[in-house]
Length: 539
View 1: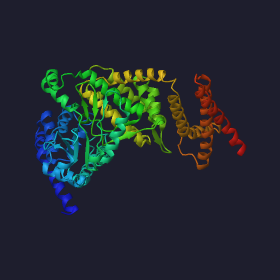
View 2: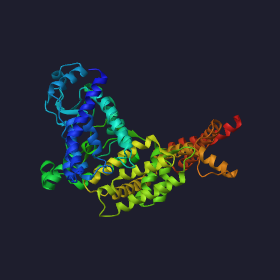
View 3: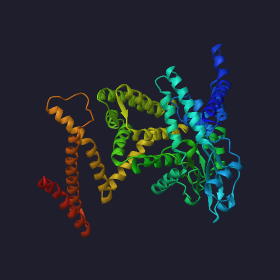
View 4: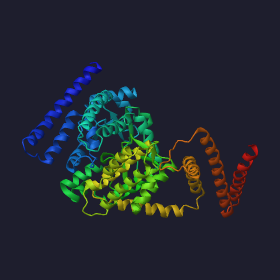
């Protein structure tokens, strides 16, 4: 079947399902009735299940968007994490043998035909290696790319229609759909996922578990990793809803839920603020809590990474927000943006302050509900304000913002106070930083962060000072220095950076007890402090 006919057939299927599940409540509302919210929520889930693949993934994506959908709908959609129909085993066998180019029996000592998990893009089977090691084998669904491309066209068309009718209000449905496809496309290459898992595992904290990749049994469509046991957050929430703590204890007798959730929050904030390389899709199905109260990260297809200078801005933004210094937090937030020539940065910062103040006030209100506490709602308001004032968010910040929004969503599922967790983490981070000052490696890392920040911001600060001196200080600083200004600024920044490194090396040389340590840093100080003078002589 050619592409056009396939797209047409898929569009007809989508239309049929939308009419099947959407028409009855719509007609009831038109005739003056009011359909029950739980029934409507179930219809949304059933429609996603019948359409399959892309729409299951979209339903999972929307399950975390308390800012867009009612709480009952979000909770109903969380069932999609564990209720995806599995591929027939014959198809699984064919994919594995095609990818790994060997019969299944020669690849694994045992291979379970029934999957232990089935997702919208892949499913996972338990297996054993020839040496007896327990494994989890992730197999990508057949034909997923063709279906995804067809569904992408359909959903973007529907999103454009929804935006034209203002169905989402101030929220752009197209931006939600585009964001969904951005994350989904990144998950289709299992080699990238394996590399991500390897980096997360190398950076892991003591109670943070990431499975190990078996590269000899991995391709872009088949991923083999060590098996990690536990229950994901969606399963735990379901058990609590059905039978409370007693039912949960039957599955994880040693689990102390509050402690495990605190561990999850701490290790994930550590990824975001300290290591800088983070799991980019921590939805409830990808986070496992274990019987020993450790936390495991699985399905590592999406990741993000920020450099020290970027993390410094984010740290200032969130640490001040957690402390209640909203004005300072908003100033850090504006550093995460890019502005055009007509941007009204002061007005944008004032609006950001108002929005952050609303979240902070809701977080202090014990009776506030999930919609008032959901971080995604306020992020959407800020994004809308940014567009109105000619400001755009830096692309490297968007994935980070979504990740911390997912963390907030997971905590809301269990009524965990996100603000308290942030305050606790930053308090421990501050105490640890003070204790680490004696470590030369940490000092040098701080110097690298400061130099990176100076290199990024110095041209714009110099531009502002020059305009102020000439009496032409505008309300908005345009971040577009000329090429000559860039060269001059880079030269000044290099001299500043080397001088700063020289002074710091001299301080370390004077304070060290070890003779070799003092000699190395003394030599480094002499070289660094002499470099600007030599450059001046050359000029």
